[in-house]
Each structure stands twice: as C-alpha cells, then as structure tokens.
Length: 222
Length: 262
Image (tube, rainbow over all chains, first blue to last red):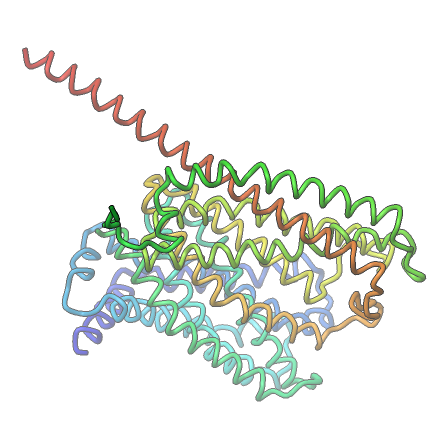
C-alpha cells in the first residue's frame, strides 16, 4: 500500500512544482462562467435561476481540459511503462493517479464555485449545498475521466475524442448534482435521495474507472 | 468398420471462430435473411397503409410507429450486441467478436438515428414540436453519442488490434453506465415533466395495430442481422486483402534488400 501513497504523493508534487496546471483549470472555469452573463444578458433573476447548472457545466468542462495530463507526461517520458510493470497492481496505480487529479483539480474547482456563484447572483442559502454536491460528485469526474484519458492516450486528436467519450458518461453526475441543489433550494424532491445517489455514482466510478484505465494502459504498453 | 472421430467436440461459437467456416455459413444464410427481411417489411408496410385502421386521435400519423418502434428496439439491440461482442473479445479472445462489434456500431447508430428522426417527425403533429427533452428522447440521444464515441475511438487509433481491444473496454464501460444514464434521465424527467407532453404508451395498443407492428419488428430485425452479417463478411475480406497486401510489400522489400546485398 505504501507504493500507492508514494505514487499519489509524487503526482501531487509534480502538479504543484510544474505549476500552472491547477491555475489553468481555475482560470478556464472563471472565464467560462464570466462568458455566461455576457451571452445571456445581465438579468439577475434569470442568472440566479440558472446559476447551479452553469456552475456545474463549467466545472465539467474545466475538469475535462485537465484530464489528458493524468497519463500523458508519464507516457512521454516512459515512467508509465515502469509503473505498468511494477509491483503495484496497475488498477491501484491508475486509482492513485485519478485520486491525485481529484485532489489537485476537483477540490479546487469545487471550492472556487461559490466565489463564481457571486457573479451569477446565486441564492446565498444554496452555497453549502453547491459545494457539498460538487465535492461528492467530482470524484466521478476524475475516475471516469481517467478511464477516458487512458483509452485515448495514443489516439489521434485525443483531446476532442476524450470529450466525446467522457461527456456522455458525466450526465448522471450532472443530473443528480443539479437535482440535489434544486431540492435543497425548495424543489419538489428530497435532497437526501439525490445526494445519496450522487455519492453512489462516485463510488461506482471509483471501481469501474481504474479497472478500465488499467486495462487500456496494459493493452497500450505491451 | 467404425471410424473413431478424433476431432474434439466444438461448440457453435468455437466452430464459428474459424473465419472460413463463418464465411461459408453466412454466405448461405445471408440471402435468406435478406429475402425474408424484404418480404416481411413489404408485408408490414402493406398492412400498415392498407389494412391497419387509423388511430382515433392520431389519424394517419400513427403509421410512423411501424418504422419508429422497431428502429428504437434495434438501436438498443445493437448496443447489447456490441457489449456481448466486447466481452467475448476481451475474455475469450474470440477472433470474430471484435469484427462483430465493429460491424454492429454503424448499424446500431443508423437505427438509433432513424428512431430519433421518425420520432421527431411524429412529434411535430402530435406534440407540436420536433424535440422535447423527454426521458426517452434524451436517453436515445445519449445512446447515439455512445455509438459516435465508439466509432470515433476506433478510427482514431492506427493499430487495428489495439483499437479493437480499447473499443471493447469502452463498450463495456458504456454498457455498465448505460442503466445509470437511463435511470438518471428517467428520474430527471419526472421532476421536470412538461404537462403538454402526451404519453406515447397511454392507451394499450389494439390488436389491429399490434400485429403489423410485430411483423414489422421481425422484418427489421432480420434486416439488422443481414446487414450485420454483411458487415462482418466485408470486414473479414478487408482484413484478408490487407494482410495479403502487407505480405506482398514484405516480399517486394525482401527482394530489393537481397538485390542490394548482392
């Protein structure tokens, strides 16, 4: 298990020391959310109604941009082959890398969301729920995304392809994230049900993402 | 004078793993499938236009159903076929499973698109709009995206064997998450169900409409299998031509290399 933590620590350190990776995703998040009022008009009532959806979709896109980085650098310098042939099962190695992506990208994006909510006139009461759903939902984005990143590792035009493969898989997370927020701000359905299903989707992705990613990497490093 | 049969017993799937045997079998079966499909579809269309009564609410537009419903079924069947083939390829290394998955993707996508297009044409007179964000429409659209993803991934990877394996992984990921997508979309719809939408499955279908529908569904299923078989045959032939070309290139290279050595 110590190899798992070492790999996780290494990936996080690389994220920090490389610099720019986390900042770029956050900057993209900011700019996409800023474009919305410019495109839709500055009607505060409209903005506050669509704010949760805008914040969630922009978060998905920002996380999507940083997905190829999970395996790309390691594939280029050959360390992915070393990881694939090492003692640590490849499923755990891909899980560690996806976890590093969640900590370095998912959590910062989720924590930035309330600040951007101010720009969209989001109801103050919705802030805790917004952050809670994003923190619970973003693991699904990182772990399913890791599978997509592994599948498109050596494909042509891999960035565009990755979006096409992964975005349909994010639909349940988006739907239940929004459902939980709208339930907490006076919607018809229960908050707990949506929130628990969101957690279940993340747990499910936690299993299937590393399995698929490991299978894909094994085929490509053979 | 009893001869002892020394060949080991093979199951049908194992026998079909031999491409030559598959080509023989499918070559004899395919014309029958195609012929039966054409006859059944023509008969179903005849029943639909001249025999089946008009719906008291929907009038003539109900006849779209005889194309729409089989197309929707086959769109989903296509993905199930891809999932089974992917499993067969990854677990049992069945050589034809990858070919089958590759051949099924465009056919399934075409039927899914047909279901969406006919549904949209049906929606205009019935619902007053070409598109509604109804659960069924949305989940069929996502199914179409999954097909697009599979085809795009296969075309983006040069090495065909690797592309087959990666597509099999993606096919299995897709099928495991498909129920979740379906479930989530259904659930989401009950939250935001627009009151104006008329449920398609409201009244139970009258036998006069049901029989043409079932005949049509059978005809389209046979058409699907005939197309799938043809797709597999084409792919096998394409791979043979490719390996022959590669062998030819290798031989030419060998000749030129030995000529250079002399």
